[in-house]
Length: 312
Ligand SMILES: NC(=O)c1ccc[n+]([C@@H]2O[C@H](COP(=O)([O-])OP(=O)(O)OC[C@H]3O[C@@H](n4cnc5c(N)ncnc54)[C@H](O)[C@@H]3O)[C@@H](O)[C@H]2O)c1
Image (cartoon, rainbow, N blue to C red; front, side, top):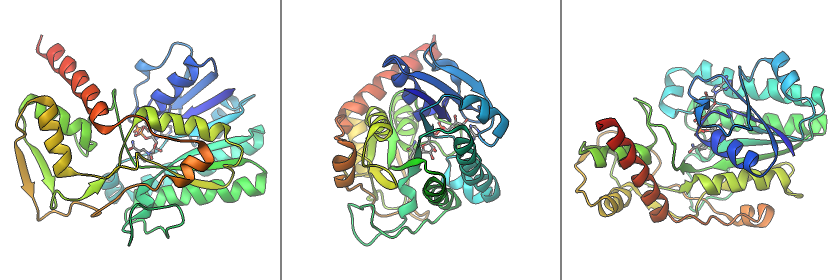
């Protein structure tokens, strides 16, 4: 397969591009490096720096491509509240520009990395794809709009389209930006280095943490599945873990006692969020195989090596 991975220097994009290249596929990666870093890409991945809204560049990159994995996006919920226009421009405008270019270049299929944040608060959990979305932040609105755009334009232009609603992905090489860091790498680093971890809300709020290897499995399955056209599909672990339980598990696995600062005044987000995986199993043959405990051990080991290297 010949494919283009937009956002290909990001956390998920790098893991996906590398797995595809290792399997012998021809992989191009596009990223503006606003958050990504191409240094960990497999040598066979052809990297281009550029914006996903740059249609002339897309035109060149899409020649002879069979499938596009569209991952390029601004990804921070809190940042999206400060800069909603930027999130709309990149996440929605980028999807529209890309889909037009896909039509013009005659690409057959696009797989969109959407997000479980589109669900917002839901009366029942695990949440399945038929739930009515209640996106609460501009980031979530932009991902839902991107889904609608690829499905409607896909129908109009005869492009096969699939959107994966990814839950909380984590894994090695996940970056820890100075603000709004993803919870697992942030907590791992702080606990190992003796810094405190701050839990907003009650600590009983739950999330579905899914390992990057499982997310990549789902993305690749979505590029091949026969009955996936026009579907939104949850990609999670199907397991529900509270932040309190996550911190306790990290304490056990690191052998350290986490210094927890509680901030119940600040909202901790949704009370519960966990994926129903029936559709993923049925359509993609997706069965997540990395248990949280195992994934955390791997991340702790990686963070230990990084901390040691910094101290040398
Ligand atoms: N990580 C998760 O838990 C998660 C959950 C749900 C959905 N997703 C989605 O998966 C995708 C990848 O997320 P990630 O966690 O790897 O984030 P990431 O920030 O590591 O990757 C996104 C990449 O897109 C690039 N990018 C941003 N704006 C761009 C633009 N205008 N043109 C070209 N490239 C641009 C960034 O430089 C970055 O490398 C995103 O679409 C995100 O919404 C991620």
